[in-house]
Length: 149
Image (tube, rainbow, N blue to C red; front, top):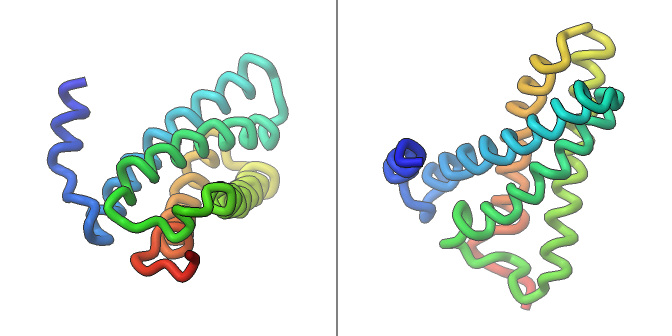
């Protein structure tokens, strides 16, 4: 645990986009660990189809991502929909669903068409979707100026 605290202490603050992206990268990494572990258990232990196992893992990772995004990554930003919690959660879920759809599509292409091994495909898809998720959450949910009152 000391190693993780040491790494986190070297990450810039969350008041600028570089610090936010680095924090989101760590958050995405932690969410991916949850996602990947659930995927592995579902796929290898329960013999669930790789696309369904991927979807189940993504849902677990998204819960971790939401909580860390609000509490650590973008906590210095005024949340665009802060006063409208249901709207904020709905927007987060919609962004997540698009990301999950993109991830599922990439898994299908990598595994189903290109015949790349499932674990390698999972990592590749996660890296691509990480950038989409960061940008969508940053500019839709955590903009500096709120137009919703």
